[in-house]
Image (tube, rainbow, N blue to C red; front, side, top):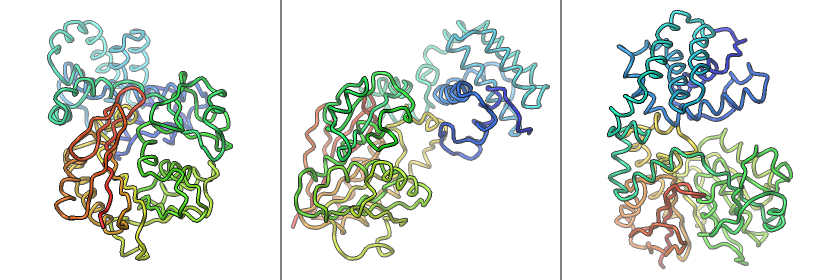
Length: 438
């Protein structure tokens, strides 16, 4: 493949092909193919095409099946994505002629001119039969929700009264919410710099009226602000560390990329308090260090350590913690609107894997908490097997756990903990706050 391709849809198809082949999440502007594009507008267009295609992928896959006699070969996955990109543009009622022309032209840029005929036939077929297909598939949940059937069933089982609104929220553009660094600037002062609304329950949170590139945020390079969802900002305040004068020893067990670590440090007032931030991924923990440095929080109050939190024998110094935050690995089913690739890359087998990781972490870390200390378990999942059921199992393993109340409106109160569902400024998150009895 030549590296001087400039055709935006062909580049998008290549990026999506590599994403699926490597089963990696889509990170805007990180793919090497962006280097082939000189225009900022074209880079932004490619990014939006990736998001649109990933967001609608289950539906687009279903649409392609209406016209393809057989699947594309593995070596022609890029052509398949070119077709899906075109179907997506037609489905969104964008300019039909341009959508078809550019998708067909993309075949040439992928050095697969033989595919022009099949891509053209499929797209023109959908252009002609769009209304009939919509009528034929009006009761098909994959078509209507743009979610894979197995995931729809999972969400419906967990939230029978909310599943449709959850799927709808998953397909929306996420809001751009900010955490204003209290060590740098007052919330009200920063609000005067941008057009934004205050967020209830987030003492340092703002919701931007008009999203902008984060680099253009006032004071971004000076560490005044960080982009962070409102649901994630709640963690630090739930651990009840604001205005605590005695020194606190805090563990952030799965810390990367460092956003919640920053929130914790923002609350600390005692210079002898300390946060130990662990993560098993060295590269991601390096990103956390960059973040904390930008925010001016890389002081003596924090230590970043590459370690597996579920194996304390490799890193723990036998001194118990006053607070533990476990933002555990999870399915990400609460943040699909930010990471639409989850719809396509997540599998039931992966959920089983993360459940085992979650249980291992909970059982390893609970003994590290001091009597009277607070332990916060968090996930960005909406599935009970990763959330409340994990706590239920933990309670059967230890007899010194007390479930603490979480009194924040808009949350779904459960027997153990609370669930935030994706809506408005809130991503889907689960929290359970526990204290250790003497």
